[in-house]
Image (cartoon, rainbow, N blue to C red; front, top):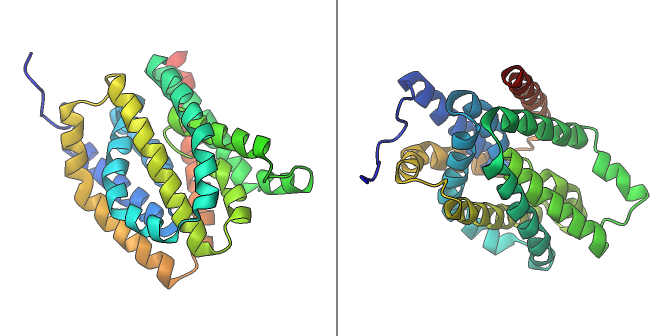
Length: 262
């Protein structure tokens, strides 16, 4: 059987241009915050490529880009915080990846939209932060549960899983720089484990790897510019506006899934 190296087969050029723009914008966000690139990319590219293609492609590009960001994370991460989170996250990623490989495209779009919507609402309303009045987020049970939820949601929805850990990381990491570095390290571990599991499941093709290489200039440029923004300004307003846009996109994706199922 011949190996297929043809990237974006049957995808119109205008759609490829939109995919490139989405990856640039998403990795601009990752460069600025250390996480968060997958969610906006998946929400845009799912409409153009379908959910399975969109999610696996962003995993491939995220792994490629992590080579660029990981040195920053290694130098600034709080390793006493990062290490214990990896086991629960790995279990969540394994279960989420299994669900991802088993679901049909229309059902997956509905689930992705719903999970991303719930995650955004929780983040916007600071529900996890409010839990600190009643729950010790540093306890082993709560930390493991958050890590498991992060891996499960991230693997199944294509992005947003690390939002479940942000509140804990804000409490555990002593500085904004160590928070960003720890987020970069965790994102790197998450994304590499996901790529390995997806490859084992047969979702990573040679043509998909070529597509990832095509997107790398936009990915690296976005990461570089986002990093400059992190060091040059305070991007809270930008992040709040982004949340609103992502919420609208996730609701529309969920609606499309419902329509296609019906």
